Image 1 (cartoon, one colour):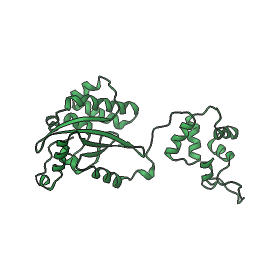
Image 2: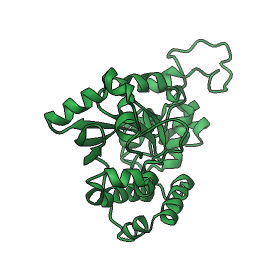
Image 3: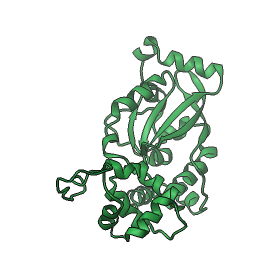
Length: 272
């Protein structure tokens, strides 16, 4: 009822006739007509009665009531149906400044952001110094993990982490079977890395979470970190990857790498 009250007849494409309404917004009968459902059925829907509903009808109601993506998903939950996949609201597509502030605040620890296909979006200075992320290069976290020789030689935990990396990517692929973007990355990874192809055939599934990493940095030695993958519901198409030092020695080394002294001798020791 509250969502119905927000939509005027004019916004819904109906003539208001100039008549004064006792309540703001659309009437139940008008929503029913615009959504292509019966007036009694729509009244029962608002009253929360035990009726049969379909995703198609709920989508029609959501369209008429001009529901946001979050409100549409909530409508599905109220109706007892599995909500549709989260989408990026049009007014939330431009969040680069806020995301840049977020990962820059994570300094001196590495942080980066990737899209749903593991393509790099942005990174902070520590990710450049420690992980070798830099402009001018094509960057895909999955493919680089298996194909970048520098990462392979620097990563002490590569073997332990490889199966989790593949299992987490498979979980995303299985959740989006018709998404051509996943299929393109998968085809490239299988063609470029026999090790990836072998792990893929295991058909392991794993949710994204935390992975322990050990890297041999040529300037400071061993870095022991934990990478955590986080998502914001408002931008379900992006993942924020934050690296946290697991011991005081690593924390001190990361702090030094962010110092002016270290920057003067900056190099990109690890890629991917």
